[in-house]
Every structure is written in structure tokens, then in C-alpha cells.
Image 1 (cartoon, helix red, strand yellow):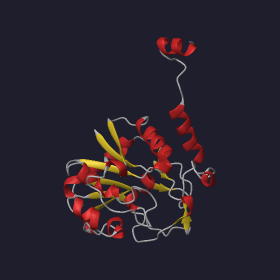
Image 2: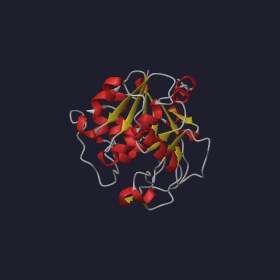
Image 3: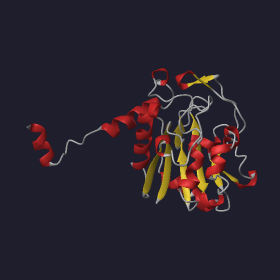
Image 4: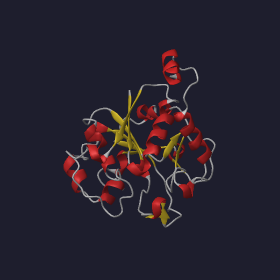
Length: 236
């Protein structure tokens, strides 16, 4: 079972469900998907939301090892993504670097815009977007305790100040391809609408937007081969 935690923000709820659908319908292994919702973390997360936190899960993502009981492996993903490949391929990365504490796509770029979705400030810092997709080796991430996540500076969390650099493993960038920052890549396995998803009007024509809308439509599609009882009920 691959345990996947997806960041959830009420303003992007449609993004969560569409991403989950894109994962599940391509997966060849059992997958458990959990929305990381701030409203459900009141017992362990006590920080006030800061002015640079563009989503409700900006910092709650670092609770994933704790929520996993510091056991096994867990995957965290931002909700503004679309999975285009079998997630089993990503899960296989665990076996290649079992000595690492966390696996990420090590982006080396400076954001091209000063603003992003909903006119929010585009914060620029070292290791930008590394934390948008993380595979946690949970037992090696005990530094992310409840106390630490609630008290550490946000940038320390996102810049991985809580772990030695040698324990940060790398993933191919295709697993977190930054839409609008990187050129179109037909081989991208997970695309990340980091500047803004096509569910926002101002980004509805962004790269890979047609694929997102196709996934959204597939999620809403009702099979014409309904059960007889259901069809009869609808005719009444």
C-alpha cells in the first residue's frame, strides 16, 4: 500500500479531487489517499497562518511523518498537480535509495514571476519547490516532531534545515515538472501547476490545461451502463 497525502485548501478543492482521480485510475498498486486538511489537525497543529503561506497546507505538509507514526514510507504532494503515469514507478524509487530520509525533485531555478495564483506574492528562496513533492522515509524524519513543526521558521522547514543534505535523495524532475517554468515535456510524469492551475480563470489556457480538464471530465463522467435499479429509479 502506498500512502499518499495531498495538500488540501478549500479554494482548490477541485484540484485535490482531480489529482486523486489521476493517481487512482493509473495506479497498478494499492494506493491510500489522505487529504491533508488543516481543519482536521487542530489537535497537533497550532500555528497561525503566516502572510507568506499561500495555501492552508504550506507547513502542515511537514507533519506527514508524524501522522504516519514515523513508520514506513509516505508521499506528500501539492494539490495543484496532475499525475500522468503509474504511481508505482515513483514508489519504486524507495528501493533505490533506502538510506535517504527524504526524496525530492531538486529544482534549481528562480521563479519567473513576482505573483502567482490569486495574486499572491511569489516567495523566492533556496530549494524552492523541493517540498512540493516529498517521499518521506518516516523513521528517518523524527526531527519533524510536533514541537518542531509548530515552532520552526517556515523557511527552515521548506529549505530542509531539519535534515543533513546528504540524507536528501534526488528524483528525476519529470516527477514534478513545473508548468510555466519548464518547457513542455511530453514525458513528464507529474505536472505541477505551480503558478496557478487551469481551474483558475487566468490560467485556464496554461500548458497541460487540456489534460487537466480531460481528467476533470473523466472524474465526473457517469457510465451509461448503470445498474438496472439505478436506471429505474432515475426514470421515476
